[in-house]
Image: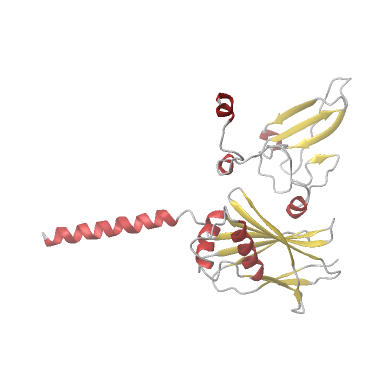
Length: 171
Length: 109
């Protein structure tokens, strides 16, 4: 009898575990950003794309339980501010490029944050830091594509990576 | 992948063409195709994959004559689209009415 009870407890525990796994499966905990050198405007344009489901849970952790990324303009603005505070680009001599916030928008199942800065005349490379959401979730992975300067270069921020570097070839 | 072409003629009429993927069989890097039209139909512009149905990584070279594709930030800064194309019905449900009365109620009273 005692044994059977044990098995039932074990089974119900298993079901609970599986259940929570399913519940959290919708969050991707992944974000993708594009750093685009735009020749038409000669700006460096930074576009961050977050999954709305990630952002929904994130704002409740970062701010408070009533934060609402879908309906509330204030939450969207403060989340965008949170993102830009955790993203930085440095020139090869480690001086920071000051990025201007352009805006943010919710589009379908994604939340976008836009930043830009005039592109310097000469740029040998960039050091990039992207810590958004990585301070609350250990498994958060941020990917950056650097486009418009030769081949597309991809940087992936995961685990304990703090800063990554891209170099550009000048012909 | 198949090549989907949209041909626009000088008189404003359009025609779409679906070229099956087998066209790539012998020359996988580049293919050419001769398009023959009626004598009175003069080709004005061509668009490859106008509805983004194929997995194309570069959409900037899909138009002839060449067209500038704005980046996401450029599009964000430009004027928002008017009209109700792409409206989000789920969000519309939450829109508050200006007055509680519906049209039918007003007619009755």
